[in-house]
Image (cartoon, rainbow, N blue to C red; front, side, top):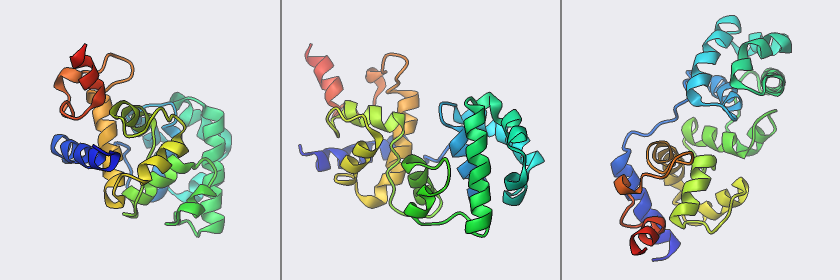
Length: 215
């Protein structure tokens, strides 16, 4: 089976297992998703969702957060780790949104990459989830799982994984496919514990499971 056919089968199986997949970061405005994505680096979405409540109570919009002293932002977001750098990026990002984009988050991938603290992963997630455009979000779950599934061969660099997946994942499926990889990575194909291959919905197609069965 070639990689395109394998990818299509994996997409179908994951759709059945996780039909209602969504981003687990809470937000009601796009700029808030930008903030949460920066805070989520090396931090759980659950913790981010709690921390941002205090942040938005004190700084409820782009202008307020752009004008906020970086030290005050840092004091609130510290529980997410990497407080100084995250606070600086959030402050600079909100200033750029205010001064360059009229307070609106741009719907262009290259423009998103110009925002402080926004990399390809975050830009892709916003393009897919918010603007409904083709997107491949190569987070740690995605990279781990597509290597285990054999969709990519020993590639660990996020951009290279993204480029490889663009060749085999239908554009309209990319965003939800990556969300489902997160769901599957958290529930079954975990990193910190032994993968639960015995209850994997991809048992019939995953080469990792096939290898185990032949031993």
